[in-house]
Image (tube, rainbow, N blue to C red; front, side, top):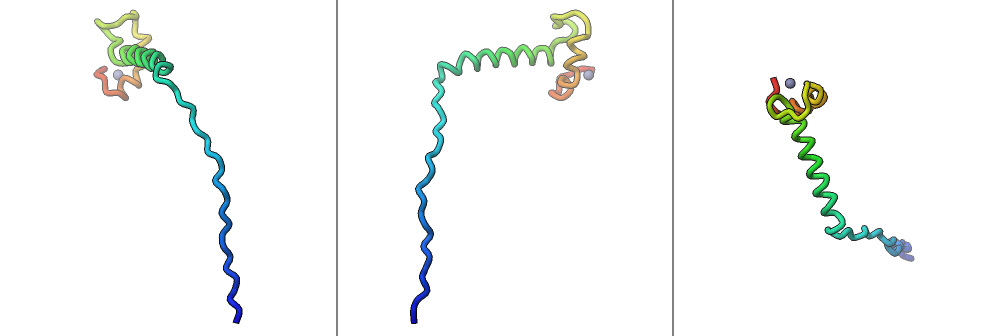
Length: 77
Ligand SMILES: [Zn+2]
């Protein structure tokens, strides 16, 4: 009795994978510092731009960031 032919799966060579380009830390560091300072300024305006620490007179900045202020848990009213 003849054995049925066993189908072997064909092995296909793996497709070449994309390798991400290496980014030197010296190219990223100035941007990281810049974004860090920008975030600190934004955090100041959200958290402390009110009353005695206010840089801009009036309530305009406070009203613009009021929801973010409550979201982040800064004391408000
Ligand atoms: Zn409030």
